[in-house]
Image 1 (cartoon, rainbow, N blue to C red):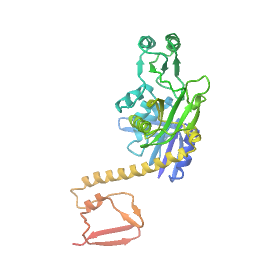
Image 2 (cartoon, rainbow, N blue to C red):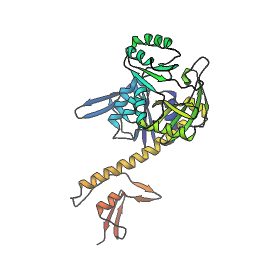
Image 3 (tube, rainbow, N blue to C red):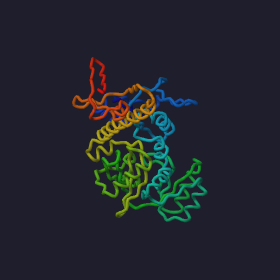
Image 4 (cartoon, rainbow, N blue to C red):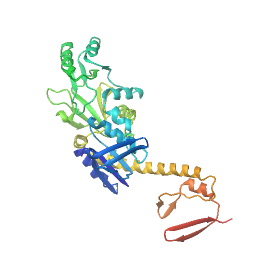
Length: 356
């Protein structure tokens, strides 16, 4: 099988690509900056360096919030042609902090109380009805950038006055005391494959590794794991990182990262995180291909119901020297387990005929 990892060629993407070589026959690392998406009334087409993108069994897109439109467009164009671990919408949702909150709310994911203000004037009105300290964020941004702490009404207003120049919506969020720590859990499919607790650097509240935080291996309890998995499902991403605040026995999901870095988690846990992702991509691609081929069979059989002769194209499923045909083929041929058949064989051809 063939996989393409379309990214900005970060170290994490390279690690995943290298691990994929243990599972996939062909692994292509493609720069997102070399990709174009063309759209017209007939459909969409993805080009790489001006040439139509090759056919792949799996395409995994990874990029920052600056490339949301492009990654979403690529996924929209290819979603019916190969397995993709992230839905088109997951890029839009995952890279917008408030859209993430809205999606998680539908899945009953616990989160800090959050407000969205269209401008700084509205934000100042919201501040009159909340308790301090509080968190102020911009909707986009990664690695802890765009996240600010206000310990009083005065400091909050000062922050808002400074941010007024950007003329964009603002998020105000309830502050959860965690002693400047958070938990990052990597969800792959329906399980957490790695988890670390991050401690912020001195005089810093943001625990992100990119902001100087230090990560240590951590065992998230069952309730926390279940909530992380629900959060991943909420944004329709089968590979993503979930950031969690723990306060007492409560877990609060604060962010979902659909293009997570894995170096910090790998170092903290000592686990082969890239290998876990690569193995999952291979297994899900195999499942997708099987489902996709079977789906095609069903449609083809419907089309041929009124024809005497039926022709179906597929790849052989051979295990232990035995050729296994899909049930739809047997149905189309009208063969049953008690039927006797003649089998004619020559190189490249097998003909099976029922004996009346």
